[in-house]
Image (cartoon, rainbow over the protein chains, first blue to last red):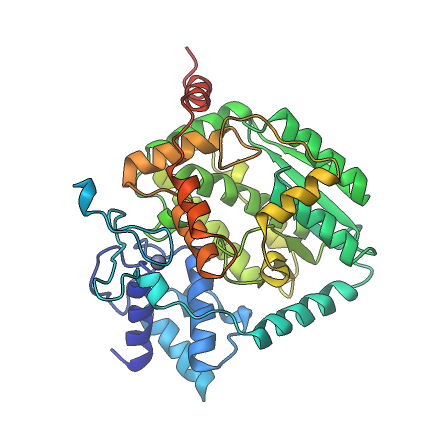
Length: 81
Length: 337
Ligand SMILES: [Zn+2]
């Protein structure tokens, strides 16, 4: 798990999103496993934008890019460049 | 056991709420420990952004600049008034969702404030029997909403608010309205501006569809954005949701005073929490019975943290018992003989 994924897990844990769960599979859908819904997703985006001082364009917020730890961390890594 | 309950020194969350831990050394809950107040620069930036957006809404699009969700309660009535005061040129369509449990007074208040602000009033009505059945299913479901959503609001209120959002976004697409305003308190949301793109609209539709399915709701299209309307909208379509209380600040007592001065009347719902929806007390109790979470605790605690509410006032609200009368009335409506 890379740094971004670890940060996301830490954020989700601290905000009570993980509901007692301790780990997350990198490729599991965060919405289908009931970790976040659309509002949770927006909170996560808000966190990532301030944590990494990036702007995440809304057009990349799709299930393909933003529904798994690996997808999100890849998107964030690309934006950090 | 009750004697072991520890309340966070700073807010109103306590150790008997599942998922809340109070640090024995600091006496603070995990949310207070991680809290950073909004800087003044950030507040000014939000203010400037909202002024810019509302100063010149995209022209020649449709009949309205803003669609606003109006419950007829203090927050949304005040927000409508203030919006029009600050940006008098805005053409506003105010939508009141009739979920079957709205008080007559709330209907009157909503229409009164529309007249006052020269806004167009629209009452969104859906099939009442289906709605009742859906609320009943929401009250019985345990796993439709993610863990954190259970702090945000009760399952019944989350369901109702999701329906409003879906239908208002649909209306905004249809009427080519660029902005949607929700009068959420800074305890209910932390994000002042949300841009909805077409793919994101499709996604949030799918997510709510899944939640309704989990509850066992069969007639779901009624509550979701219309698929044809979304698919026929151009790919570059964008709608912005704005939460103005994150820009203006939030003082419920002052808003209420101002609303009363303007002719707003207080409904008598025997419910200290909501001034407009009869379902509220039942929904809070149902949520508490299911999860041992008071659905207002997180919201009010966030307001305390931000300096928008006194801790004693929040604790008083949270410890005021549920009105049996209001609860029995909802029970009767949800389960008719
Ligand atoms: Zn706290």
